Length: 123
Image (cartoon, rainbow, N blue to C red):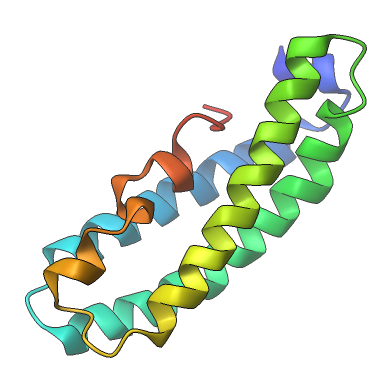
């Protein structure tokens, strides 16, 4: 139904959904990791996946949604764009942190999942 509404392939939406699942899984693994070394390794795996996903979602989904005739639909698209910009900045900050095992590092809003795979989700 969503694919018809947006005029895009079901496969593209399925790929975006699978990306959300993979990112959520990596976040859970990062937060369960016991050492900074484990978190650093998992974070290095997460960053490119999340950035590629965010750019694809922006270019394929949100640009189309932002052109909708419906005000709330456009607002949803703009909100998703803003969330992605915030997540990219947070990722940059997190990548510069030295101690990825610290409470300060894990307290970042990005780890709540809300910014990464929550409200803007296509599930």
